[in-house]
Structure formats: C-alpha cells, structure tokens
Amino acid sequence: MTPLYTDKRRFSVFDPVLLIMAGFMVVQGFMGAGDIPILAGFGLAVFLAFTKHVRYDLYEDALVIRYWAPRKIIIPISDIVDVGVMRLPFGGPSVLVHRARGRVLAIMPKDQEGFLAQIKARLESEKQPPSPAAEDEPPRPRTRRRRPRRQRPS
Image (cartoon, one colour):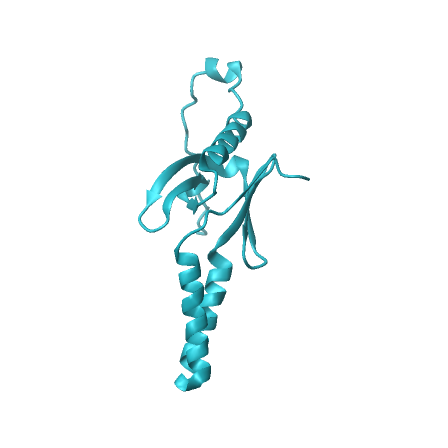
C-alpha cells in the first residue's frame, strides 16, 4: 500500500552536535581515556538511532513514524484524538499528535501546514456522524449489578 502523504523530518541544529559528541567520546576512549567514553559514545549513538524520527508516512488508516534504526511506530488513525502545533524550547515548532489515553507525541515534519492539513482531513473522514436513533433515546441510568451472596456453611 502506498502512503497518501509522506514527509521527512525537519533538520535540527542538535542532530549533528549530538553525533559529533558521540564520535568525540568514542575517539577519546580509543586514545587512552578508558572504556567509559567509548561506552558513553556508543550509548549516545544508539539512543539517537532509536529516538530520532526520519520520515512520516500517512496511510489510509494509520500514521507511521520511522526512525534511524530499524524501528517504526504505527499509530492507527482511530487512536489519534487531536493534532496541533506547539513551539518547543529547543526544537522549534512541532506538531503534537494527541493519542488516546492521554499520550502525546511531538514530531517535526518539514511541511507542517501540509502535514496538518492531510492528517486533519484523515481525522475528519474517520469521524462518522452519530446515528439518529441514538440521539432520540434518553441515556439509560447506570445500574450496578451485585454479586449473589455466598451461602455460609452452618
């Protein structure tokens, strides 16, 4: 299946800085500073590989977020509650994807307006109007069922 919309991650100044830091730590470790800088450098590189978004694909029924590493997150459109723009302190303006159960994911597509328009169109088409029969019925009172009592042996 081909995606309806694809966008790449916006460039951030911190991406090359963090990669240079990781490389510097590894080089320092090999030059005699010990094993700690090597482990810290590789740890930072692995962390970046698993947390930095590379591409966003919007399909008919899901939003797929791909990372540097062979990792991806698939978010069903039905799980997305709302999307909006927020300016983050170090990352600049980001698109916030509000998911069910209160989870939020910040992503940084290059074309924010185009991405927002596409995903909002998908969310609108996903919403279905309530059936007229459901509107006419008054809400039923919730009753609590009780468990039957156990018979005590005498």
